Image (cartoon, rainbow, N blue to C red):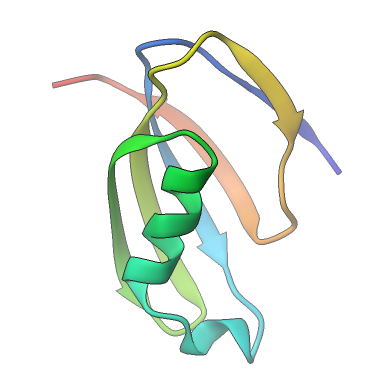
Length: 79
């Protein structure tokens, strides 16, 4: 699994590809998982297998392995 580092105060956008059963999950459930991981101001869009999530990392810089469902991560401007 690839590792990714999040930096304090930065906002990120992730592309999420869900499996068949996972695709039935609501966006609120996905957002809750990201909040549990430490992100704030989380927004999840999309439906079915393809979702997009944005969130801000408020904690100290951290690195972790990306779950297989996250296919891309981009740092975006905080607005």
